Image (cartoon, rainbow, N blue to C red):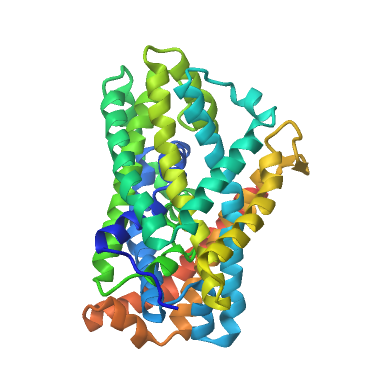
Length: 431
């Protein structure tokens, strides 16, 4: 079977940006900034992105391109005993996707509500069974895209939607900067409170956000790298990283001016997107238009990320068992929908909970927080210590000094940072 490839470097870059730029950039990044002291958070965040997340992204791309296969078989190629590790990473990303589709479906629903000029209260929405309907529709959209293939599905979607996302983003930034609270919002956002830099939890949050927003350690970029021809991996990873950072920073220039203009809480968390901002949009002129643009932007980001997540298990099944793309996509789609039903139902009238916590929230903590860190730890450790370094150096190029620094980061610095982030998350949750 001839392996699919991206039609061009631009197509690969747009697809990878689509993978990296998700809901995490547009609503999670601003509220993480808000919870961690505004501009002070940007210092550890940028350090963590360029010193740790970028090298791990390069590592994934190098593994995928060198071995020309997906996550499970790639780990098997490194060593037969590591195949279960690869499958564990595939299972983790599948479980993350199962509840990520639920959140993406809420965004799709709100886009439609604002387009019809019928904004709905989030509590009323989740006290019905409408979330389940939108969950299935969103899942089918992602399924249809991945089923169409790398070029005709994933790449084509990204070519159309990423420019749309950027255009909407810039329109909303232009509007937000004209609001009465723009200067106060920007001051909160960009003026660093250096006293917060002494708080280790701020650094832990920065490292967690860097890995979360760039989709590293999840096997996505390893899979995308396996469809990549000869190109400069450092250049490609740098373009993806800078684009991801710029979109996240621009999202903050939307959120914080609106927050300060409407008297909202900058650390409101998830409620900021689905409760407070919709209420603000509903009470201003042209609020319905702003609501449509905001949620359409969120949905584009969510959709391109969900597509990249689904490609990981689909590609592993194709490469491991020789299934056709159509058969593999259908099999994985059915499994993900079944896995996601408890999360979807936890925010419906049924209210599925465990220990008083919605199942979606538990899944997000176990798989999207702890599991993601563990996956990154496994990728860096297995590749750094058990993969032939010459394979990696052949892919990333550079001088001997740069290669030695890269290997040091992969073998020592990144695992230690991820381990510290994991411990910090456990301590934070225990507290």
